[in-house]
Structure formats: structure tokens, C-alpha cells
Image (tube, rainbow, N blue to C red; front, side, top):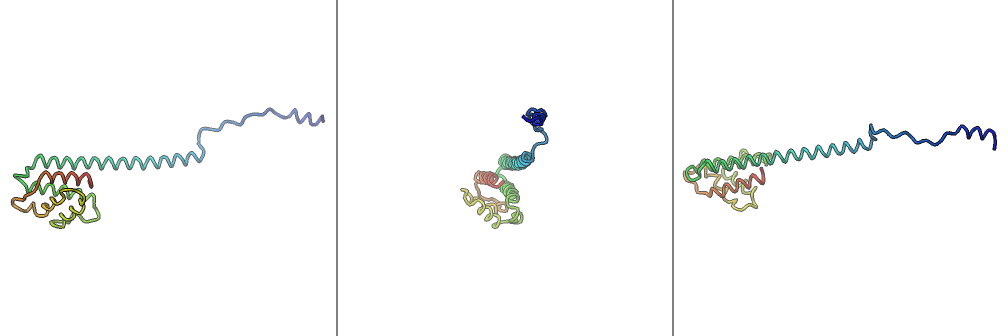
Length: 158
């Protein structure tokens, strides 16, 4: 062997491992994954909050219908009962259909709008009484059907 080669071999060091990769900061791919995950968690939380608020609003409106049923007797005060039910329908319609100018509908137009919006619901023809019932001295209507329709309206659109 060559003396120069022996010197060169003596200068060689043993194989050593590379230093361990640091845990922080993570690689750019992990940052992108964290950002996407945070975005989806934000969307999920926002959707959950909206659903919770909608459910809370529906429960409030359903309690309102229960209060009307409990405190207004449709036999002794039918106009007050119909007026209160009409108010429930109107509040839900304004929230559910903000671009259709529901707030200014009255009489026959209002009753037609409600019937069209509730086209697949049975007993929707009972809503005709909302057009003129609050102004008649003795309107004839089915209060149970009206309450049932109000609850369905709230569950569908509220």
C-alpha cells in the first residue's frame, strides 16, 4: 500500500448519524395541513352554532304557540286567537322568506302565500280564515288545526 494512502485512511472518521430533526417548527406540509384542518373546524363550529340558534328559535316559537293555546280561548276570543296565530305565521315568514316582502302581505294575498308555502301539508285550506277571520264577529275555524298548522309551519320554515 501506498504511504500516502495509509495517511489518508488514518484521517477517515467512523460513520456517524445525522442529527435528529427538530420537532418544532414543523415542515411546511404540516403547516398547510393544520391550516386546512383549522378551516374545516371553523366551518363545522359555525354550522353547529347556526343549527343550535335555529333550534333554539324554533323552540321559542313553539312555546309561543303553546302559550297562545293555553291563554287564549278560541271559543270566547276567536279574533284574539286568530290574530296571535297570524302573528306567529308572519314572524316565521319574515325570517324564512326575507326577499319576498312577506311583511306587507295582507288578507287574501297573505292567505294565498301561506297556502302556497304549505302546499304539501294537509289542512292548509284552514289558513283561509286568517284573511278575514280576525275582522269577523264570530269566525268559524278549527283551533286545533290552526295550532297544528302553526307548529308545522315553524318546524318547516322557522
